[in-house]
Image (cartoon, rainbow, N blue to C red; front, side, top):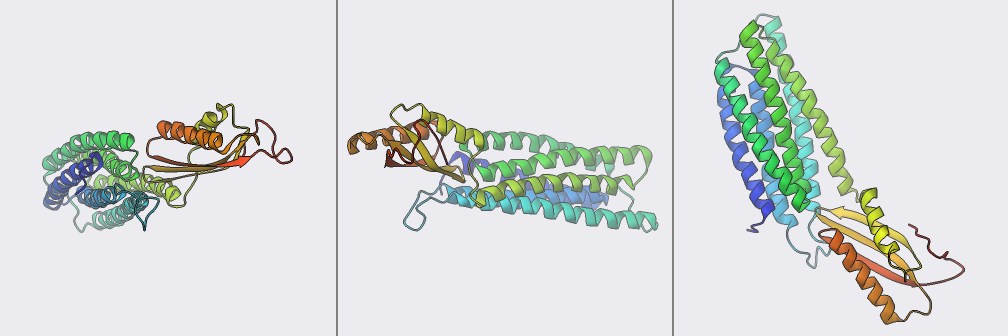
Length: 302
């Protein structure tokens, strides 16, 4: 097993989610609360997402090989899409179950809650545990630039908000004896996590479609090139991200009188500067000779 900060963080998430799924499911069944059961399903999705994240970061950490010359970073992007889709699925399932519960209560066919104190306590425990684990995952995801861990952290963050909502709903039911509050809170929970899941789907999908790096990062790359006085111009810059790996390639134009050794040295220097600025960056620079009929001194380009 590849023992890295990312795999350790993923294992922490697996352990915490496993405990919460069991706890919420037991209390949800005992109390008859659809909002608590929906939270158990949400945590089960979080657990599945954590397991997917664990295996994806293990795969993405593998070095490039003959069959995968650009590395295995796409595993994290795939994981991010799957995790986001799971959030959306959970939102739909919760909404369906909540509507069923509303119909039961409306038709006086049951739906009353029990053990509200235990239910509220479980939600408070969930909030505290997921807050701690989510912060840890966000920290590791930012340091390691991991799409999979960021998606996993987003999962747990939604669980924090939904658990707070469910806890508030249970307290209101306890005070007012209006049991219909429980499924209404579940619907609000579903809307919240559904919107977050959609945003995550779009974000992870961008990586799968090889979208360019953010404009701010491209601007920093161009600034590094522009600060090299011996470079006449640059063009055909292409950037993309695969997991935590950034892939950058472009052409620089050198004076016609520059020797091959000089041009190669400058290209090497620029590659090292860009790689130092962006962690896990693979930079390839092609050198073109200056052609007065095609180039304008000092210009950039794409």
